[in-house]
Amino acid sequence: MTSQRETSLKPIVVPFTAGTSPSPLSRLGHHEVLERWHAVDRSAHAPHIVAVPGEDGEDWTAAALVTARPNTAYLKIVDAIGDVPAAVAAVVAHARGRDLAQVKWEGWAARPEDAAAAGFASLSPPLAQREAATGPEAGYVRWLRGSTVTEPPYYGQTTHFTCGAVTALVAQVHAGVLSREEFDRRAELTLWRDATNFPACEPVGLGVAVRRAWPSSPVAVHLDVDRPVLLDHLSENEQEWRAHLQRMSRADAGRIGVPIAPHRFSTAAIRSAIGRREHVLLLVSLAGMQGFDVPHWVLCHGVVPGAVVVEDPWANAATGDTWVDAHLLPVPDPSLDTMSAVSADGFSGAVTIGRPQRSGAPSSEPADE
Image 1 (spheres, rainbow, N blue to C red):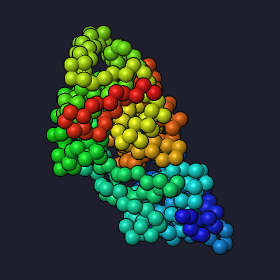
Image 2: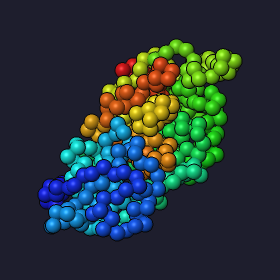
Image 3: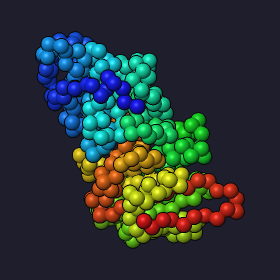
C-alpha cells in the first residue's frame, strides 16, 4: 500500500557528477557519506540525487544518492542523509513514477529499524565474495508491484570464470537439494572443474556436470546452434581441442539422458519454466548491464510483472556495483531477451534444472519455446 507521505512527495531529481556536489547537498553535512559517493566512477549506472526540498524552496531537508544497472527494473539507494525517512519515501515515489519493480537500499549507514519502518525487508548477506569485492555488510529490498520473490542465497563467484558453477549451486540451494553449509569454495571449484571448457563453462558441459552432481534433478540444455561455442576469441589451435571436449560433452549428454533442445529459450519459456518451479541457468552478454560484451551465466529464479528476477554472481566494484545490485535483480522481459543473444559468438544457451524426482518417476522433456 502506498502511504500518504509517498503520494504527496514531489522530489527534486538532479544528475550526480563525481567531484562536484550541489550547494543544498553540501549544506546537509555528512561529509564522510559524500566521500563514499565520490569514491568510484558511478557514471555507468545513471547516478542521480533524489532530494526533498525545504520550505524556502532553496535548501533540501533530505537527499539520497540513487543508481541502477542499465536495462533493469530497480533503483538502489546508496545512502540517504538528512531526514532519512523522507528521502527514502521520495525515492520510492520516484521509482513508482518510473513503474519500476523494486527499490534496494545499501546498508552502509542504514539502520535495520529505519529500513523496516520504510517497508524494506533485510537481504541475507552473501555466503562468499571475491577478495576484491566491495560492498556493505547489509542490504534491504522493497518490492513495488505487490510481488515478492523467494530469496535464494547470494554467492559471489570467487574467480573470473566460475559463474556457471555458482549459478547451478545457487539453484540447488534454492530448491532445497543442497544445504547452505555445503555451498562453499570447494563446491564452487569442484562443479566448475567437471563442467569447464577451460576456462568457460559452455551449455552442454554445464548441463552434463549438473546431472552428474545431482542425478535425481531433471536437466535439459537449450542451445540453438549445433557447433562448438565460446571459442571465437581463441586461436585455431586453442579452438581445436576445446571443440573436441564439447563434442565429448554432447556424447556424454546422450549417454546420461540430458536432452539438448536445438532452439533458443525465450523469455516466455523462462517464465513458464519458473512457473513449474524449475530454475534456469541463462547465458547472457554483459553488454547491456555492464557495457562490455562478455558471455556470463546468471540464474533466473523468479518473476514479477514485466520482469524476470535473476541472481548475478558477479558485481563490478569499479562502478559502485555491489552484491546488493546483483542479488534479486529484476530485468525487464525485453532486456533479458536482448541479453540472452550472445552476440560475440552468435548463439543463445540455457540449462534448466527441474525439481528432484523420486526414484522411478518419469523425467520431463525440455520445452522448445
